Amino acid sequence: MTDDTTSDTEDVRTDGSGGTGIVPPDDETPTWSERKQRTQGLSRLTYEYFERARREDQDLRQQSDYVERDVLGFPAWPHEMIRNLALTSFFVGIIIFLSAALPPHIGPPANASSTPAVILPDWYLYWSFGLLKLGFLNPELSLLGDTKLLADRTYGVLANVVIVGFIAIVPFLNKGSARRPVEQPFWAAVGMSGVIFSITIAALSVKNLLPMDSKLLQDLTFLLPFVGAFITYAVLRTMREGYMFNLNRRYYRLRPPK
Image 1 (tube, rainbow, N blue to C red):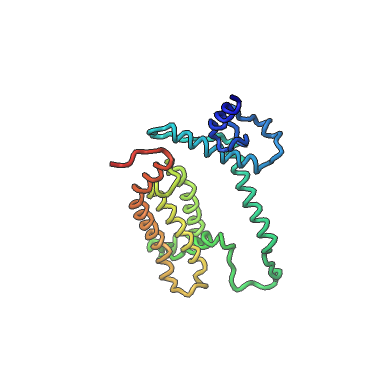
Image 2 (tube, rainbow, N blue to C red):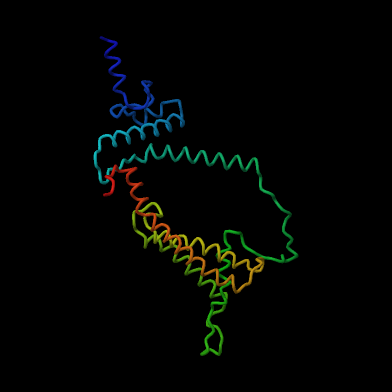
């Protein structure tokens, strides 16, 4: 009789622990103080998080025949914090390893008595440096005797203000709940055009170093972002219907389309 009861109890366990008790069932979830007393550390807690998430998601799918928006969520503490801590520890370890194995080269000290032939900012500021070189777009007004209303330097500073202001206001314009580019092709195209423009304007900032005609480079600086945005929108728009169905079927058990 004892053997049959034990066998039945072991068969009922569906928590993926194989009877070892690694992942407790729902009614035996330990408190944070009990978790803190464990000596297995981060690896044990991380394993419990992923195993418990897998089991609860599987139970939800088995119980739901047709659910329009049946989303499984987990609390931020300790579930999400444990996962984020594991991922952060991994990437920090990679950075420390690379910094130890491949230390950066330190060049000779700068000579304060001589001016370099080419003066450039750090590479991640090339786009801002390129906006300072938009003097060819600064119009000359005939009413002012064919002189410019603003100096080229002031015009470049205003261009930085406009571009940075547009980047800052985009999150307030796009208030949707989409998390993937295919869900909102328009805003994905806007983002792609911004990325391409940052690259082309950076190339314009170092036009003296590029073997390309300056007029052609100026045209490509403003033409390529629109071309990239159009291609991005067209591609995402064509794949949106099939991709969205496969994505939702994976998460929400939807009926197939008729």
